[in-house]
Image 1 (tube, rainbow, N blue to C red):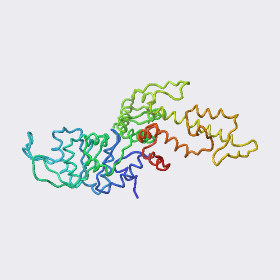
Image 2 (tube, rainbow, N blue to C red):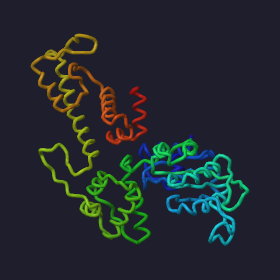
Image 3 (cartoon, one colour):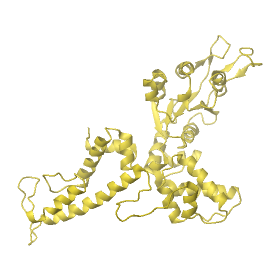
Image 4 (cartoon, rainbow, N blue to C red):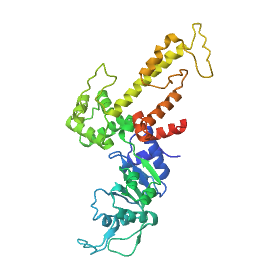
Length: 393
């Protein structure tokens, strides 16, 4: 059985949400193997921490863990950095030099931003992964290395493959196991845990009293989109505590730091309009679900006669409603919800409602599951599970 808490503690992973739990379970399932792993996720979402967790929970945990930022190394010297070079092989090569793959022998090498590698270098990397062989720059003989390769990217590699910017064979070799580091907005329920950990670490290190964040400040941070993910959150917490030494962090401090406009409520609008488009759409959906639930309760009452007997259905699933209550049907139509079909109104379960909402959101998003999950404010894994559960095409 996989010990999720042990995996979290090994590198300090924070979170108790489904997204974090599922990620840690997958780490535990593949850490003990030597299989190559591709970690995907937005910038700042914690991809390097996932790579460290794979290493710390593997049989190579007492060997080297070397991180290489492929985007930070100029293309002209990347092969020398990865594979080493022979003395005199190019201008400035004054001595023989080991590359990262030789230095990481028996351990793990983490190739961050692998999508930035040139195609020629990708071919040599594929050989290392498949055969454990590489050749130093300026040499003609191959060398062996025993290295586990973990790669990460925030690019859409499949699109790069289609555009001939990334080798297809390397892509499928790396993608044998894919772990997604979810963006912070998909596990925002963990926000307080991050505030507590980062806040305490920073204040103890800098000898500052930590009086916490107000409830209003935390709620404001929960509604922020966090494009820079956990990295941006950490910087925000530390900056707020440094500027407001010894104070309890309030809503206005957070608002000023994040440069957020004040919320001006307008009774004529259903939701505040200072949020991003996706947040507004989610809030509208939630509000309409509440309205629909109320309408369903009202409609159920129509199926019961004055003496408490349930009206007989005209067929197995449909009831005939009294004409005097037809205005309730138009109210549902006015809400632009079709959870209850226009021409058939009867009993409906929450599962049926959930299925229809997922189907219609998928249709509106042209089948894009990532966008659908984002609009419905659920993780992609949860969406995939629901699609399978409800047998949605």
